[in-house]
Image (cartoon, rainbow over the protein chains, first blue to last red):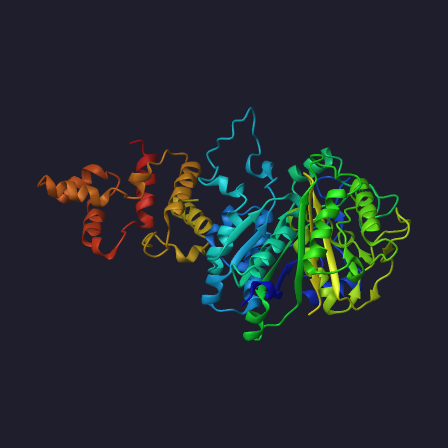
Length: 404
Length: 123
C-alpha cells in the first residue's frame, strides 16, 4: 500500500481513571459530576485525586514481576492489559504489535529508602533488583512479557507530555508503514510523600485549604496550581484497512501529531507559547486541517498561573476570533503527570462517542477574554478534537483525533 | 513463626503464589518455576528474614552437578563427596537427590530449611 494513504484508527481503549474504568462509566461520572478529589491523608494542605482501592492484580492477575513495579508503572501495566484484553486480537497479531509508552520517574524515594542518610542506601531487605523500580522501561518489559508483544518499542520520558507523544510516535510508525498496529499510552502516579514534596517545593500545587473539589481551577483568574492525580490509559492503534479487515470497532482516527521543545526554562513554559505553537501547527499540518476545522481543544489546563496564561495566549493566536470549544479535563481528574495525555485522550474519545462536552470545573472568572471555554456540560457532536500537553523541561505536544 | 512458615511467606511473596502451593517437598524450579532473578530475590529475603549470610551457590545447590562430575573424574564415592561439599543436607536427602537427577533441578523447599537451620546452629 502507498504509505501516503495509510490512515490510523483506535480500535481498543483500556483506561483506569478516577472517573471510571470504561468510557461509559467515565461519561456517566462526568454528567453526574462524580470526582475523587480529597485531602491527602499525610498533608492536610494538599488535595489529590486518587484511585482508591486500585490493585493491579484485579486487571493483570497474579504475576511475580509485580514486585518491580512502582505505583505509576502498575497503572501502566493494568491499563495496557485492559487494552490488550479488549482488543480481542490473537497471539500472532500481538507478537507483531508495537508498544509505545509514556512513563514518569519513580518519585517514591521514601518508599524504597525510608532511612537513607549520607548516601548509604544499603539495607538487608533491599531487593536484589531494586533498580528495576527506577528504570523507566520496566513497565514496557512487564507488559510485553504478560501480553506477548514483540514489535517496535519506545518508552518516552518527556515529563507531562510523555504519553501523548507515545501515542503520536506510534501513530507515525503505523502511518509511515513500519508497523500495522501498536499499543500506546501510559500510566503514572504522583501521590506519594516524596512526589508531593517535590511538587510542593516547586510551588506547583494549588492551595488545598478550601473544599477539595474547588481546589483546581484551570483558566480561572484565581487559579493557583494543580492537583496531582493518578491513572493510566492505553489504546490499540491500527492501520485502517487492517482494522476493517478484521471487523474491529473503531473509536476514532488519529490524523495529526506534533511535538517541540521550548529551550527556555527547566520548569516554566515559554510565556507566549511560541514553541508550543509549533507543535500545534505541526499537528494541524499533518492532519491537513485549518484551525477552523478544530471543534474542541482538550487543553493542558493545569490550573497553574504560568501554563494557563501561556496556553490561553497560544489558543488566541492560533484560532483568532473563531475559538473552538475549550475543555480542561484536569479539573475533573487532576494532573496525572506522564499519563495525563493518554487518560485525557480516553476521556475525549468517550466525549466524541457520546456527543458530550464537560464543563471546565471551577471556572468562574476566565483569565482570558474571547476564548470559548466550556462553562456548562453540553451535548455536542464533534468531528475533530485537538489535545495539548506541555511538560516540565519545555516539552510540548499536540495530537488530533477525528470522528470515524 | 517457624522456618517453614517464614520461608513459605517469602516464597509466596516473591513468586506471587498462594501459600497452599508450597510444602517442604515442593520443587522450587521444577514446580514453582523459580527463575534466576527469583533466586536472587530469595537470597536477599532469606538473608534479611533470618539474619544469616546466604551463599547462593550452596543454598540453591548450584554446584551439585559439578561436584558429581568432579567425584567421577577423581574416582571418588559420589555420596561421600556430596556429604563433604553440601554438609547441610542429610545422607538420606543426598541419596534421594542422586536418584532424582534425571528429573531436572532437584532443589526443594526443605533444602532451604536445612540450609537455614545449619547456618543458625553456627557452623
